[in-house]
Amino acid sequence: MVIAEIIIVAVIALIVLLTVVRSVRIIPQARARNVERFGRYRKTLEPGLNFIVPFVDRVKPQIDLREQVVSFNGQSVITEDNLVVQIDTVLFFQVTDPRAADYEIVDYIGAIEQITATMLRSVIGSMDLEQTLTSRDKINALLRGVLDDASGKWGIRVTRVEIKAIDPPKSVKDAMEKQMRAEREKRAAILTAEGQRQSQILTAEGDKTSKILRAEGDKQSAILRAEGEAEAIGQVFSSIHRNDPDPKLLAYQYLQTLPQLANGAGNTFWVIPSEVTSALKAVTSAFAGNGTEAADPSTAPQPPQPAAPVSPAAVPPARAPEPVEAPQAQQAIAAQPELPELVALPQDQPPSQLAAQQEAAAEPGTAIPVATPPAALNGSATASGEDH
Image (tube, rainbow, N blue to C red; front, side, top):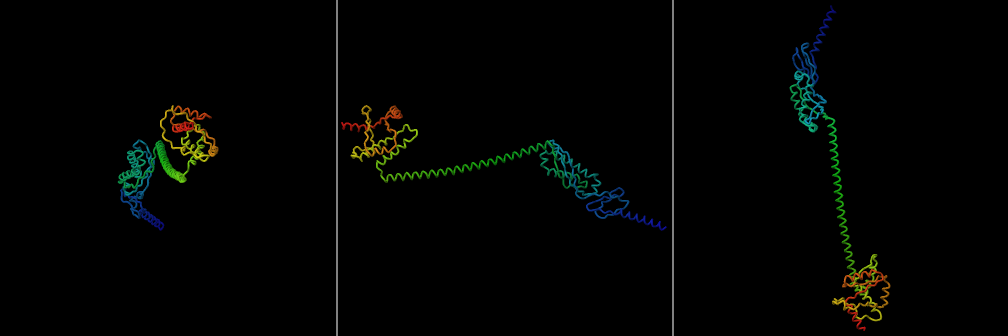
């Protein structure tokens, strides 16, 4: 009897313990469980300690109330320009009503995936590939609005939708890479051209500045050189007038200049001004005055007077002047280098006669007759009449 009572007590205790265990439910934080009584929704167990009627109430599986992340990979979508792209999306949602999420839809995860694919085709179908690649924020906002409205009756709130990747076809990728490469080459060419343009501009400005500075320097040097030459000429001119040179010095300077005229490498014909003959006469008269007798003032060289027109037939043949034997003149002439025969060509002869005389002067050893002005011819004629 005692053993039977012990067994009965033990069974009763076990039943009471099992009843207590089945009547108590502990729900974690951010979780929820629905309770059915005889197959009908009874209540939703909140986080914490909850009591139910054992063997009468049935507790359904636990529902997570935290925000969840679901990734949908490889959804094929056709764009407006008839290109098939693969789009990977990421969906963030949260269960706000455990009862609706449990009784309003069978599989809310699958339902969200399907409605996401449908809305992607609707949104992407109204855009071309370029807009699809550059309008992710717009697509995300449209998807979130549509999914939130559709899943509201399911007790689900869509918090965020993100497009993770958009993969166009391989041929389109190759074309996009070529386009990107062309754009980069274009920018590189533009930058190179801009650099060359700036370089040429700076080089031109530098050349301009250097030429301006060089021209300024040449200008200043030319001005200074001209001022120096003017000052030198002024000093020489003032020195000459201050010392009052006589005809002998001027005649000697003429003689010093003649060798320089004859030193040219290609000088076969050259013209001597008529002032040289006057200077030579002045020299001979000057040296003659220092000799045995003084020069007659009446025979001193006079300034050239305008000659009266004389007929060529009435003019007697010209006679060469006799050289004056003066020791000083001979020494001065002997000190000079050998010079070619110098002649003074008349200015009133015909062109044919002048050409003939020039050809004769070009031949070596040929003396050119010296024509005397009409005034000199008249004087020589008078002197010859007196001699006779």
